Amino acid sequence: VQLQASGGGLVQAGGSLRLSCVASGSTSYVMGWFRQAPGKERQFVTGITRSGSTYYAESVKGRYTISRENAKNTVYLQIDSLKPEDTAVYYCAARRAPLISIMWMDYDYWGQGTQVTVSS
Image (tube, rainbow, N blue to C red):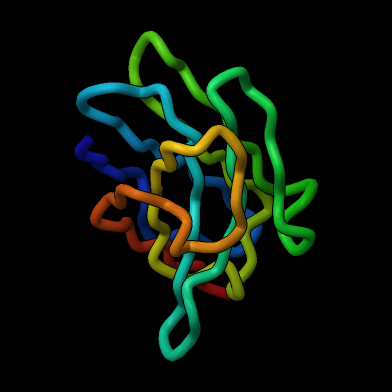
């Protein structure tokens, strides 16, 4: 499985972005988004099962929305009301096991990351 993330960019605080992650090959996976800011550990953001069940990190609830289109092998991350502290490289990941995990080491495949920079 190869994952290709896109949609990052430079936006002003309060703006929105939609990140996309296209998967090649089988899509029967749990999909997750993580982020990593400079000098910090990779952090779980949100995950979605194949059936559409979702889970969010407490810090992003209400502003982040994950969704998926299985027919397009694509997972989306809508980010609204962006804050400077959202600045990070965002990674999509796929997990063969059927449950969402908040631990990055539980994911089997990773995309290359897309940079999100929020200016104040």
